[in-house]
Image (cartoon, rainbow, N blue to C red; front, side, top):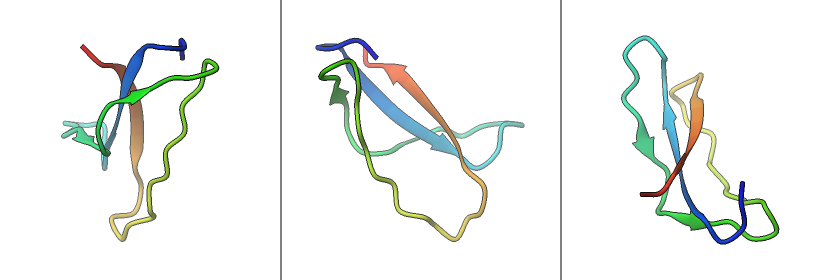
Length: 54
């Protein structure tokens, strides 16, 4: 992460044909890091990615 840039955290339940879901809104990095909490769901395994917001 780069400070002062904005990122979006997304998750998917599989990587075969991933349907990425946004987890909240964009987050701006501070001190070269971001922090987010995502509650454990009943859908089992999850995959995550962080994307630079536009």
